[in-house]
Length: 368
Image (cartoon, rainbow, N blue to C red):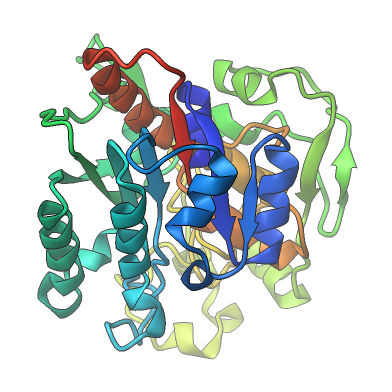
């Protein structure tokens, strides 16, 4: 989210995360931004005001994504009993203490259905009490140039009385809509990256080909090195299974004698993405915190292996200069938890337009 807002023209004045690997990635990617390590419960609004060098009410936009795991449909024990489910109240505490002009909250769509939407109702009622005009919608990442099917819920609120308008989609799969660009597909996104065998690659390496699409060129930018491009380990049985899965195929293409025991009992209409191979002309499925065969369609379209962290990052629209820190499992988790920068940028650009409509003269700032 921070990267998308910076790309749109905001300045990052303060950030926080309790996760050390995510914090290190943020610090390396944005060395000029000030960072507060630790749990949000241990940080006060005055801490952010102090290191940001601003006073209450001066902040243009507060941006955050309270933990989504308690609401995710991928969590079969999801619910408001999860300790993480109440952390949105820490965000509301920051809103009250910072009194920003605009604010953005992002989360999974499942937050609307947990306990009859109790979290959503509380967020909206509290923000209204604080004097904010709140809007909520589900945005589709692929409609904003992200090569991935991804649905996320966004709240945007402001205390300026502005009737905020959501960003108009820029991409579509309908050929008759001449004002839209076609969706960015998997081929456009990742097929320029070096070919790898299982366990091949390196945390830092050189490109081996020229960019073949506008998207590839954009995400390469001025980068001369490629980070986090290592093919994960696969058990021999999974290597054998991959040989039978065509582009766009799944577990249903694997001979029955090679299927895991549980999949032999599954209905053919279930788990449609499991053991899925991406189609080069299609969109990627939602990038999760593990690009694991058992979780979804994470097999490379032309190579018999699963996706690398860099390929997952490309499908999330991260530029190549971003280096994800920590063990590989943590790198995947950071990528999967992230808001696609291109989607965040589309929202940020609309907020900038709204702020400019109020003739804000000083430099725009952003605390995350």
